[in-house]
Image (cartoon, rainbow, N blue to C red; front, side):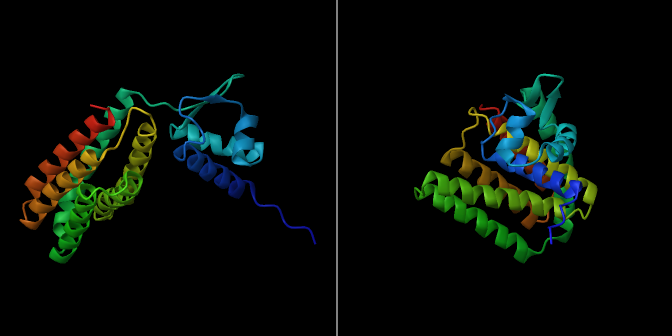
Length: 222
């Protein structure tokens, strides 16, 4: 018996996910212009499924469909970067306040230990690629935990989208993550945690705002 073909919506979801995987693994260069056929071949998907996926990807700002000229992959500019971080500062300021209400001292101690472990790895000369992977895991998990503490699906979804957009910006060669930048990021997180441990949400919010301002400068290559 012949296999029943997957529904178009399912196939378009596969195309959508494969596009993002290819983009973030740098198999699709940011700023490139490709034909629909080339992109379908790269992603190993049918053109019909790709067309459906492209509608959502264009709405999310990952590509632009150029009439009779192909598909241009996004290359975010400085204005877009600033907009993303402004949105993060709004969302994460509120998230820190909710986290302050709900996090236990045990949870805060666990987060402190995870950050301090990354700093020790950085200062101990851990191989750069391994350090970047470990630090990114802690960094993303910490910010995600803050947003999840809001228990607000709209805020969580908006923040996830901002993080993806910033992830695209970081694909640019101008963004170079060094051991020093990793230590700075972890120390800025620790300042937020110290204020939370002191049960001082206002100082925690201010520390997060300062962290995001510095993170934006790092993303700009400053």
